[in-house]
Image (cartoon, rainbow over all chains, first blue to last red; front, side):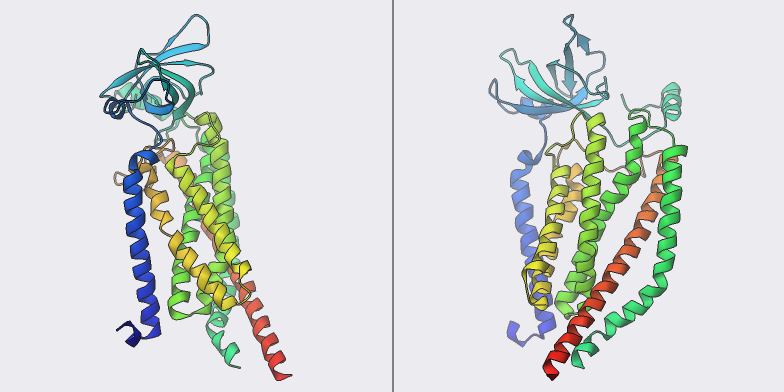
Length: 149
Length: 243
């Protein structure tokens, strides 16, 4: 049947069906890999899994407000990672990125200790999609319209 | 004469592009100049990133064009594959190195921004990884043209790579929505409007239009030289056949 088609039509059909099949198979593959493609677990998704102590993974969320405490040794920071649903206490020794702030997104790489505290060995600050001049950000905060932190 | 006749269409393109080129050159220089001046000297810093935000004026135009050029490559490849149109494969072949350059610019400027902002040059999240794959697709596409001696076979193989790789484009665009990533979500093309303040957005738009004009200029020059090269090849074949 395909032989009767004009060569032009045949090539078009070949391309369309090829792209269609590839698209479907890639879509299914990505769907199956869904969790592995995610960069980090959130505290809520962590609570639904059982992760062994000392297994390395990445945990992401917001740094909970009023949760940052610096220990007296000067390099250890305690804070809480939250997704506004569940929270995990975290501990980090080292220099923090500039954007590490309360209410700000964070991705931490590390492991759980037996007390279920997340011992982070690397901290990445996550930037959101909002870009504002400082004066405007201050003005919005003053008016109490701030949606962020 | 048959071979020369086939190039009638590219010939028309050549003459038309000669008229566009001076204008796209002028626009590229003036828009990028204005955009850089506004972006580096007039636009305010960001409330969190500070001055680092100015990398956006190169990073975002380069990154969007990296995808756009691939889309152009895929569409013209499909045209050349289905209708056996030589101009389609000339455009795709000419576009590939430009797209690869935009991609590597986006990756490097992104790394320069990522270090002070995130605290790392690179992370294997879905957005960064899919853009790296885009870069390798460009390299693969360019490589295929070099492998085949027969230009018609090369055009066919390259077109298939371009079209298969096009599946990566929606993955790049939606990677930040489908999975959690360190890279932030879309700021400009969003349902509820841009989340970039207009003082930062306007220089960015100038830069973006400047990059587009630059793309048009470089693409025209590269397609013209591709057309000339093919004419030389056709003439060489004709001469050797007459002997």
